[in-house]
Image (cartoon, rainbow over all chains, first blue to last red; front, side):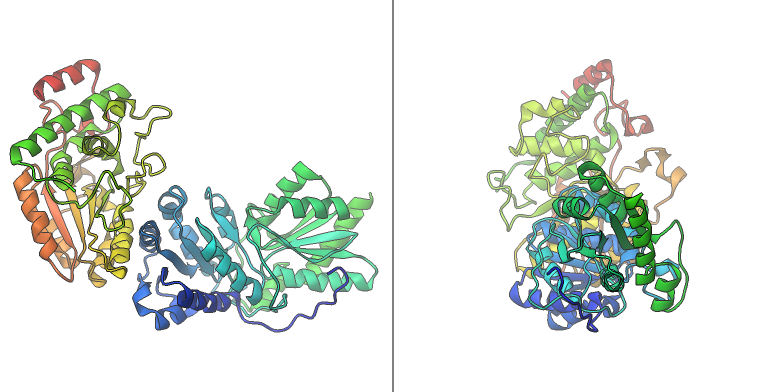
Length: 321
Length: 274
């Protein structure tokens, strides 16, 4: 796909893509069940609940209990999807995710919606900027952060087919469609969206679209940037990351998350082990954001193409130094 | 499936289980004797008294009943019972807490597949049990779920989240048992965080409540039978027990919540448990 021109078309929110994929799965497999903690209209599990009321469990505002119930359902052969806002699910139920899910490797799928700061007006108490780090620290967990509706649908299906605990990070705002409908996704296999020769943007979630925009702007100046979508943060596709480091010698990692403990540090660890090269990191730096529009927040907190371009220039300067 | 055992037979098993608890914790030099000894009759009644539908030859039998030791620190009692039932080797009980042992410090499914849940972090077992009960209901299985809670454990908020859930979702194939020995690690419950009034508390959460002497095997058998007939709501058995039951110097002695008996104390306890 090296020189493919990307056209970013408007798409649905990844949370909605999750909710729709869950209904599809529910039609195909009666062992799929869903749980929600009074946010089903926001997480889109209400679609599943409307079609399969017997397999949908309303838990009330009690996330810890919800995760425990999911573990019990899984141990009896069900494939439970437990959904809530990422911040509540990972923070309030972290201990349950550790002891009831990760430790016995329960086949539970945990879906966080409203991840990152792009939720907008509700502000930091509802924003999740640390859950990738938390989820990655749970032994045996697969951690997914899809970029668009196509990858979300595919990865929700992959999560259902995977035996073991999975966390899926989805977002509130509508996001551009990055992929063709027939694009294939595999857990643990990053997608080389665009191949470059000067540097590579390593991104996931809504930063993939920003990376594509940044790549286009740089291409106009004769700089060849690649875009690697690391939709699976864990297990990390070390091969693809090592290849990008070796072939382009400069990486910019971009995520809608605290730079401490998210995708960036995991990629940096792999690069340090495989092929050390200059790296720059886009993300939140030791702060909580604030209320605002999605666009306004992403702009203010440095998560747009402009910021990726600036980081690219910096990493290229270091590479040449 | 278990064959019918007389009260005398069940009491004899309970005595053996008590001896095994004292010996294994003594050998391990750490563990929780008090809350293991208080739960012996509850466990013996469940596993040997015709309550749990289970089959040690087929531990993964999908229609089996489930037992969860939510108060995971009481696992020496469960290990002794599982070994007595034939799930695990009796002759390895004294490897408790040692490197490589299947008898881990707290129940760990990775080492003993017959354990229904890995526990040890208090407050979680009732939620897990709810999930198992829901799965049984969805699949129209006869499965019933039994969850043993500590009395100190119910200070955890998650217990009451699960209690609310069980009543609202009419989970009538689940029975919780509170091992009400009135002590927790730091001392008497009343001095740490009172849980009374316990019976009205569970009633107000919409549960069917049975109160009994948790060392009375026949009362326990009758209560489990009563619970099976309760429809549209879960049942909780508030079982009044004695911490350290059966060993005079451990009874009602907060010291033995989480301290192992010395060699001499083990000998003394075993003499009492002849």
